[in-house]
Image (cartoon, rainbow, N blue to C red; front, side, top):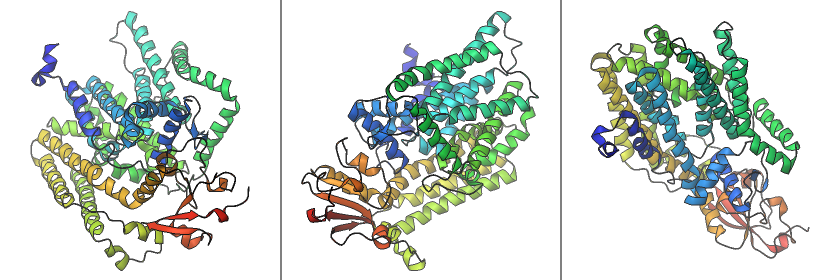
Length: 561
């Protein structure tokens, strides 16, 4: 036991935990939760705490049918002990991030050895969107881990078992299917039937690619479904007893709507997720093509897992390109196969068996330049926003008001961007000519500089333009015994930051002389709503704070009940 206190003797895997905590815990509360999804989910968890009902999901104390409860249980537990705040809402994903890195190390170690496991974990840790999402309050990082593990244990069923003694083979296969069912059940309990849908598509695609070779026996499949059913059954039975089977109809109807039509303004174009993944998984996407092309260089175990990962990648892309609702994190399950294939490519580089090809280096330089230039532009435009409205025609009055927010951009953005870009250039030069291990370490460190700069320097300041003014208004009014509603725009921020209780008025339509009980009524709207839709002349204007406009409704202007 004593050797664990001597860091010089730590095994590779033990470093994952402190590295993960160091990456994901700092600045969890550095910015307010973002509207819509982050605040929406955190509010559901907050209402669990307020009502004491941990089975029924509610938003604005009305039934919420979009998601099952597992992630909200995690958030509610976190906020119960660490406070109802950005930190409390985001902490579960930070911890899931550490578990995910440990999982990737463990899986990678089994496939290619210690070094590869560590490389995969570190590459995933610093890649752009994976890093950002582990510092968020979104459901997807938790869901992705569960469904990845379900696919991983299913993939074990297709490995060669000829070297496993027959008396242990059956036990190991049953264990793999039991764990597959366990994580499949958790995935469904986290995000709903989309988990089973994606898993089934991956299974069918592999079945076809393997020329209809049997993957599991009937008794093994039964074991998986029993394991999955035990996870889902307890909550389902208790909830059905409370709410009746009508819940499932509403639940399935809502998921069909999300898939068949562009929801809540989240439309997009064909190719949306390809673009998001190509840029968002930087530096991985340009490296995946050669990894598959050179698959013959790997063991049969690795080749089999590569096929599973490729099928997962294409399944995610096809499904979410066809789905009408286009949201960036919908395709986040693809981070696993993309980072895996990129890790294989860098592993060959680190082992001095390959060099990066000219077009791989060119794409990485192009993406590096894109990020560096974007950071420089953000700095100069942020400090002199008048450059935008004097050189561009901006017809949206709300956007113009947002840009007038007082946000200071530090010069450290410039030298960190330069450090990132120079680091990438040097690393890529080494990848083509010099020692491979140094090039891989350089790429990981350079991308880490970029990712950390975005989280610590850019994201909180972007929030200063987009929503901070509104949230500050809500937090100020939450300290007073007043009624606050929004008008003309959709938001969840008022519910969370006003700390509403079930008896509080939550919607503009609920205001009348009988419901306000003599309290002062404030309305928060946006400047574009005032310009385009207008507000009643009886309302008293109080302030316009960066596009969020505050009014007071005098008592004589209340509608009759």
